[in-house]
Length: 271
Length: 137
Image 1 (cartoon, rainbow over the protein chains, first blue to last red):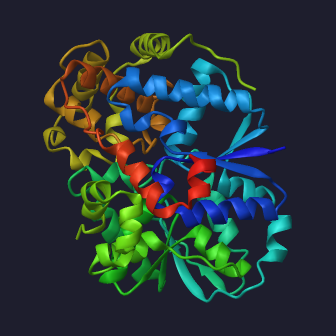
Image 2 (cartoon, rainbow over the protein chains, first blue to last red; image 1 turned 120 degrees about the horizontal axis):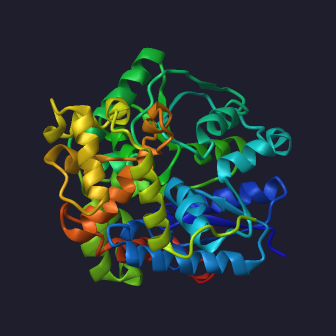
């Protein structure tokens, strides 16, 4: 029986390797979790400017969770995480416990720590945000400090919002957050910027092209210490001079050429 | 296990809006604590109390003022307003509910999310194996 659902959300489809690694990490610490997400398991937030539609999507997802029999819903997306407890749980009820992936791994650090055998030489600053009721601002630094060879550099900056998505549509806000993160890295002597959430990863990986730093997600760093290989394809595509060639014609054709050209490539080609 | 407290979102919105309207004293502490005000041109120089009253207007289906509309649109749920509030209003929820009303009535433009799910599916087809598409979506 599946102990839990790993609710990765909708926009995480850009980062399949993080879903795979997260699921494998849960298994490694004794939690069997079935990944679930995409449009059929949406919290409704992408449609929140039309609350009636958002409510329908959220209700369908919550009913699916409540009928699954899973004892726990393990979240990734902070928007989903918040909606689960406020609008979704408040109107549909919540049958399962819920916690963020980072919190679940942190709670099982006794099982995880002995598996982190590989040295990862990095001095990291973490892209921490204000407004996180997910527990990640404590759990992610704690998890990274379990990795041998890795130094977590403390700094006081916390970006507004709870992840970078909210900042991207406010003129000047994301640019300021990026500049402040780079300043924090310079002040602390960090060489690696660690993202926590998918939208932050999406908005920050482009810094690798010009800022002389590495940008990794916290799951990537745990995977390196576990000795598990992975490929961050989104970053490779985003930082390629020719994303279309980097993806390859065969994969584009298989995914639907019109959709990739209209919906994917413009995002990957952003400056 | 959490029991439902409201029949639907409309009931939640109505009850929470009524609670907020009864509790808020428009002291402006939430506005003053908000890290996003610097990014709202219409809120520069605006009085905190007046701007909160504008949000309360939006919450009641009104037009608000330019500062309130800009603030509601720029809220990114940083949550620093919640501990700043002396009346336990939950200003973050206040702004979210005001934004619902304002977008439904056209007072502020809705986010264009027409392609959001199509984009999610396109990335899934690129990055997921066929088995993952079957099992994870």
